[in-house]
Length: 171
Image 1 (cartoon, rainbow, N blue to C red):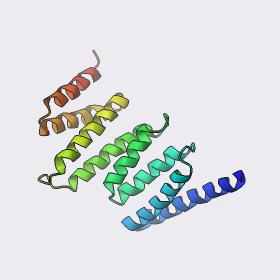
Image 2 (cartoon, rainbow, N blue to C red):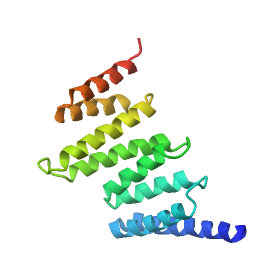
Image 3 (cartoon, one colour):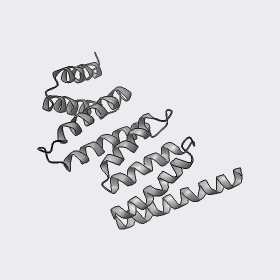
């Protein structure tokens, strides 16, 4: 039975990578969603596999390329924060922030959901800054948090983000 499981795992990885390569060639969102299907199948079948964080990151990348930004945000954040520490976690956290930014660009500022999306980006950004304070993007990310909190009229949030920026500056 273990032999069949290993073979099935190998075939799912090959299918996902094949469809991902096809999508990278065509650049069609529906092709990226085809690849996403196989990454999801792998993760549903082996959620605790040692390669799950890598497969989850690739799922996030396919969703981002398909312009499915909400799904990409979810998968990048899962990759960054829900697995035990791994090599790609910090990169996934940053990619989640890029997906937040792209998603916000698709929503008009007068849309009722816009403020909520800004608040979610601010929360995700703070989570990243707390998890990865030494990342070279963290000061810029915190600056965006301050702007977001000002937009939301959340002065307590501005203070928290400002204190985080100050703590980054070496004495």
